[in-house]
Length: 93
Image (cartoon, rainbow, N blue to C red; front, side):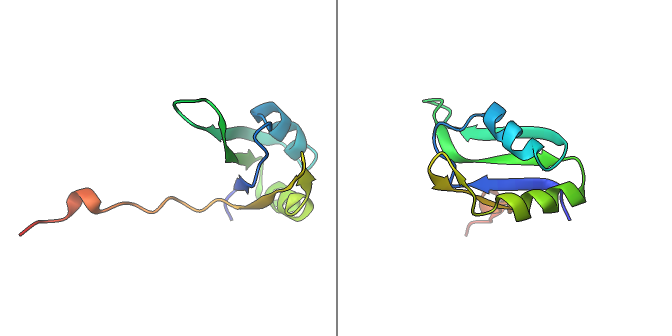
């Protein structure tokens, strides 16, 4: 299992620091990043947290998935790798 977690349905006021504090209840937080819009700097409503090990990641999922944070029930799951795009590699007739 991957120790990197996807956190969805975040309220726009959730910051990297508040997300780190939330996940620290379940173990060591290696990194934490709330995704932001490049132009406005506003939160995009999701983020990624890397936990210290697999057991801590599993504990965070069990403890936080569905938990209400700033008025929203967050979703926490193992992060899946982004699929590779082949759009630029297609041959044209």
